Image 1 (spheres, rainbow, N blue to C red):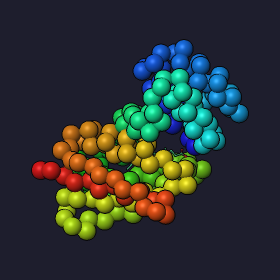
Image 2: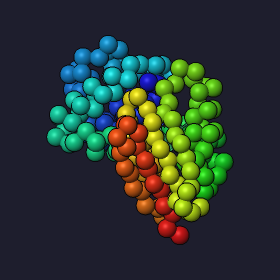
Image 3: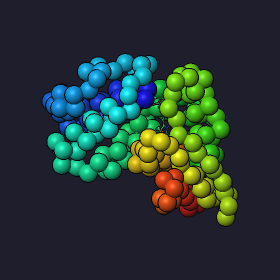
Image 4: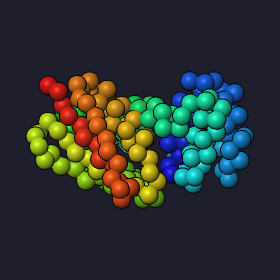
Length: 179
Ligand code: HEM
């Protein structure tokens, strides 16, 4: 997993809970990397799982809520770090559709070792209703949920989001534009 995910996660923890919390969760997670992340480095995905579960333990907040909150935060950070990807369109559903066909394709060119999810997108009922089926071995559905909400807020879009887990482990997100 790319270092930017870790550096942004720890920044969010510091802003929300303070630096002592960052220290505590790094220490208690017993990480192979020791918790020193560089934005361009690559680290085991299991380290974020340990950090989030320690944060849940220390803060008494549920893991899914922490992951959604992090996803929301992460979108703002990614949009700042990669303005060239968000400036291409002002239509939120078009943007979300382009995560699979353009943004993550470009991300993979920059970082060939990036571990990215797969999305199948369609608009089966109306142009204003996007179906995104998320698939990843890392099962970061809650982070994905937060990223989608962060994206909708960024585009100031009036949309509702519903999600449904498939028995095979994939997750359907239905994003409906209200106006
Ligand atoms: C400016 C926009 C975006 C950029 C630059 C971007 C880039 C990235 C990067 C660098 C990673 C980390 C890869 C790794 O750790 O190896 C990532 C992961 C991920 N991205 Fe994006 N992304 C963007 C928008 C989105 C949006 C809007 C969604 C949701 C629809 C999304 C869904 C995900 C998910 C769920 C992961 C976690 C990995 C997984 O689930 O397997 N991304 N993205």
